[in-house]
Image (cartoon, rainbow, N blue to C red; front, side):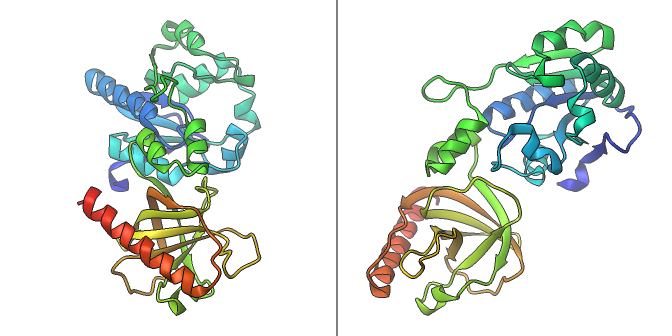
Amino acid sequence: MKDKIRIYDLNSDLPDLEKKAVALGYFDGVHLGHQKLMEKNIYLSKKYGLTPSVLLFKEDGKRTVKDEDKYLSSLEDKIEILSEIGIKTFCLVNFDKTFMELSPREFIKTVIAEKLNAKAVIVGSDYRFGYKAKGTTDTLREYENIYSYKAEIIDFELEDDNSKISSKHIRELVKEGEISKANKYLGRYYKIRGEVVHGKHRGSTLNFPTANLELNFPYVIPKDGVYLTRILVRDKYYYALTNIGSNPTFETSKDKKIESYIYDFNQHIYGENISVEFIEFFRPDFKFNSAEELIEQMDKDKAQGLEYIEKHLK
């Protein structure tokens, strides 16, 4: 997909002459509300002969932007998801002191008009920008004629309780293990990425070999327990059982581990990058009295997973 997209670095490249429809926001998780905004972007781009684009912050600024330490999606994830939707140009900027201190009008003038050459600007109804977030959607509309763009304000989709879909709420759902609901609002399975590393190889001795994941980004991690997942290894998907927890049956350490038993898989993949997509929560992480009790439960988990796959995923 990346051969069909274009990356534009606002901090090093000259102002871009390409006329764009630009979506503005943080877009953590690229949930259904964000997707609605992107659909409007693509519609306007086709209508007015513009390039569907998005402004994203470079990875270094992520902790500063949202006062969060865990996220639903990395910059790589966002580009992958948005390019599949149809976004063509990705405009990247540092969230540094210079950027943070731009007044709302300076942001519109230097970033939207001069750097991006945006002719349409698409934002959510609660979008804020500029120094101390003083800029609002009203500010965007105020300067439309002066800087030759059209502002489009989008109301996000509603959740089941009629509250607006938000990345913050989805992060909480993931933390609570409410994976089905999180997936519903994301419009896809929640995904994390990382590298397969060596563990203690205890799974192999129990006849349940696992791939141990070391994250490559500070993702929000679901609560401890066993999940049915889908794993992408070497461009092929496999179903798996993923355990998140500290192995309380054998360990006293509280260090959290992410281990996946992959169905119908026996390849060595140490050092390789994989993704894990969460489908359904099965059970909490228990401490068992013996290895035999644990194996008995793992056999039940395996059977439950196969039954779920057969019933819901085929």
